Image 1 (tube, rainbow, N blue to C red):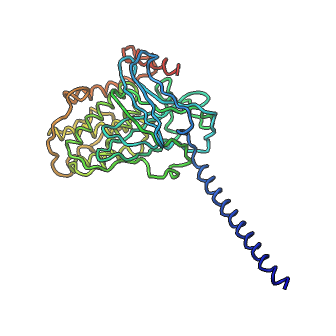
Image 2 (image 1 turned 30 degrees about the vertical axis):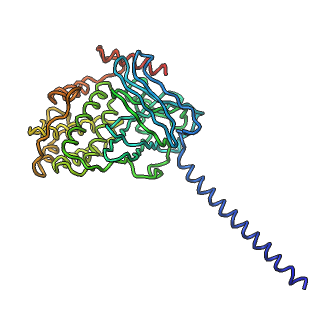
Length: 388
């Protein structure tokens, strides 16, 4: 009787122990899974707890503004860029040195823009210097979605102080102590909402395929307007030695045209040819994609004006060949579309903008070597950034 009475209690205890053991196993498995996922990315934004600050070009006599507003799952960085004595605004945070040597690069997630594509420059600071890489936030005319981009460490080759790539220095991801996001030399108001900034071990650790490009319905009038706005902003950035920003904006716009529904078939054929031709390059490392995209844009605009494609002589060899002319003539007639530009770099003939782009390409700015007003501005800008 005693044995019979106790047995259920022993079995109950055994069941409880088994349940507890199973619970511990599940908990351990959950911890392992969580740890594994966390190990694949490091939050460099920490919006809820980190102290981010806003800095502008006032130290160099600039008139740009910048504001930072925290939202539920990110921040909105807004302001106005003025080229009168300056040309930049940024948000920045410092932290204890992080060893990110086992990671591959940055994942940045942002809200798409409602009005125009905006170039954003990410800056990372190691124990020796600061390095930057640019990307573009795409325009989404049919609803604001989110865009993600992956920036490998190899894209961070340009030194922030000297505004050019350094062949003998590289980012040291094992000693990262600060991060910043800039809007540079893109005049007018801006508002960029950043959601996530993570160091990731590979692009596969990002929840979506990158880069994210909107799929929109666009008329040829929409396409022309977007190209003209893109060229105006890109030329300004290029002429101020921000060639990676120019390349990033051009790339984003060309991919948007490629994925759109509605433009003339020849227009989209050019977009496909240009993006395929530029695919092997990184806009943060090489100027070739900017020239490829520029030739594509000029070919499309000439078609809208019922003009022949521009000649090879207008572009460097990297953008040469018959690819653009072949594409624009491959699929029917491109409709005539009048220009929407009324002022700025795109007003008047496209020859003016080509000259501006060619000037910046031919006369490479190295530090403060050019004896011109642009060079003087670059000198002051370098001083301002070294102060920051």
